[in-house]
Structures are given as structure tokens and as C-alpha cells.
Amino acid sequence: MPATPNPSQNHLLAALPTAEFELLAPHLELVSLRLGDMLYEPDRQLQHAYFPTTAIVSLLHVMESGASAESAGVGNEGVVGISLFMGGDTTTSSAVVQTAGQAYRLERRRLKQEFDRAGLLQRLLLRYTQALMTQMSQTAACNRHHSVEQQLCRWLLLTQDRVSTRELVITQELIAGMLGVRREGVTEAAGNLQRAGFISYRRGHISVLDRAGLETHACECYALVKREIARLLSDVQYRQDDVPPAAADKPLRSGGSPGPGQRLAH
Image (cartoon, rainbow, N blue to C red):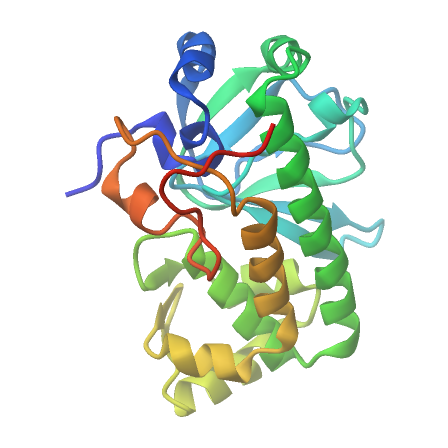
């Protein structure tokens, strides 16, 4: 049975102390996001920040030719719309729903108001932004220097970290667009991983069968990104009064996860 929607399914919202969360909670709007929904477009004023809980959003750069590539993904570990509190208001990228699900959205003026309070939310958002920048820069290096097979392993692992199931609903065409490669390259790479017993694939569905195998087959980029997220958010304590077990038990799915009795340093 699916978990009852709860803002604390998003790790940034779950990390806010009760007093600060209660200021924000009345302004959080639960929204359902469908596969392919565009949350923002290049050079358009962003109206909301989105805190995904079960959805995953891809930050995409689209060329004049129509070719695209993902610079980062955002799931329940983060927020979509960092330019709203970093001072830019617009961005050159697009934000497209990669995995359907739910998110809590917050109107941009309210986000800026809460950010300017200079409380824990501000520090969480700034640390998350650094983690997102790490993911973006590592993705650029990975796409340039590593094989399609390694890139696919990295992408599958990061995606599975953000969902509660082994099966991912996505087509090879969409994955090719995320990685910025030809579909034939993804087909060949997925076939190799399936023959190795790491995944199974049927039209529009990929199931991870051997996660450890994928991790050993992936390049160093996956582990580096996860390690940096854990380092930056390692002193976060989640609200134990209302955090669902899934969020509390595996906050970052990586070594160095937040431990009891810790709070983000002031």
C-alpha cells in the first residue's frame, strides 16, 4: 500500500525543526506530477519551488538542434528551483518530470521570505545547492570520459536511490535523451547489463536485479556524488515525531548518513 503523502518524505523538509517547519507547512501544496510534465522552461520566471517526495525531476539542457542532455536529477533528497533563492529567478535549463509521483510546491515569494529568515532552511538549501553543483559537474565529466554503459549504471543507481521499488518505468528513448547519446547506444548498453544479470528489461520497464553488480560496473562518478551528498548533509537530524520510517531509515542511502542526536550546525 502506498505511503500516505507527507512533506517529511522529502529529506530537506524532514530536516527542519518543528518550529520552523510549522511556519512553512501551511504554504506547502501537494501536487501530482505526470511523466513529461514541464515544471519550468529556459528564461521563464519560476513561480514555485518543488520538493519531490515520490517524483523525480530531470534538469535538462536542450540545444537548438533539439538534442538534449541531463545535467542533474532531483528526487526526495532535494528541491527543484534553486535559482529562486540564489538570486537568478530564471535559468537556461528545463525541469521535466522523469518519474511520475508527488511533490510539495511552495510559492516563490514564500520561499524567498523563509530563506531570508536565515534559519536552518537557508543553511539546508545552500548545502543542497553545493551537492547539486557537484552532481552537475560530475555528470559533465562522466558524459565526456566514460562509456555509455558506465553512464547508464550511474543513472540507474541514482534513480533507484530516489524510489522505493526495483522497477523503473522509463523508455530507452527517454534515457538516451537524459544521457545525451543515441538510442542505439542505450540499447546496446542495456543489453550488456541484462546479459550480465544486473538488470532485466522489457518495453518501458527496467528492473534492477543486482544492485551490487551495477555499483561495481559503474564508474567512480556515482560513488563520488553520493559521498559528497552524505558529507554535506551528514549532521542533519530528522524530526522523529512525524518522519515516515522509509525516510528515517535510509535518508541518503549512503555511508555517512545522519545519525541520532545530530543537527545541522548553526
